[in-house]
Amino acid sequence: MSSSSKILSEIFRLKLEIATRYPELMKYLDEEPITIPNQAKPKVDDASLNEYLHTLKNLIEKYGGA
Image (cartoon, rainbow, N blue to C red; front, side, top):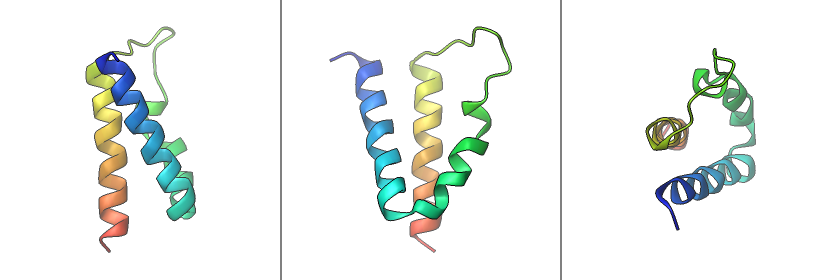
């Protein structure tokens, strides 16, 4: 499995966790700047996927730890 595939799998897992355990956080996923590219053809690479993954982890950590 490629690095991108692993990252995408983890992103999917975290989004599923948010949807099931913290559904009230779903509204914040649409508001994340990383999900709204400001380019016609945005570059999606491991670095940008990792950044989004980190954003999801922080969201869960801040909310779940509160």
